[in-house]
Length: 116
Image 1 (spheres, rainbow, N blue to C red):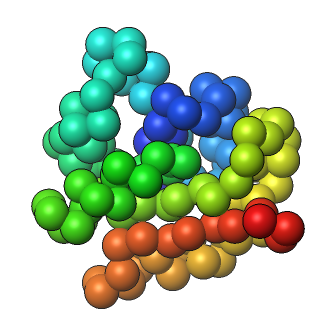
Image 2: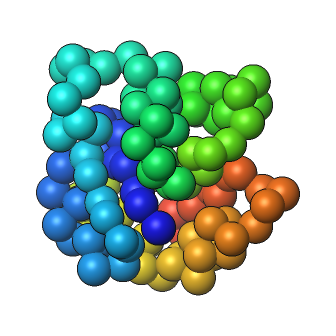
């Protein structure tokens, strides 16, 4: 599984969760303009065969409703949190991420904070 991390999450997250995925890349490392538009990130993700897009931005769910998947969206429903905290949530929900990746019907996984 290849994962692209949206610019609204730390680039440091790629290193923290890299062992979980085949490849992890942050949006700022794609060569797209900074800041890149959501649609440019969406298109880049699709064109470069990244199955998963990790974000906190609801706009990607709306784009997916119009265009389908891939990419599949992992939506972090969290406040601004530290990189270790976000990495821990991804590790905790990794089985759900695998299920999302292999499910032909589902394109969105929402991960909530325990107290959100």
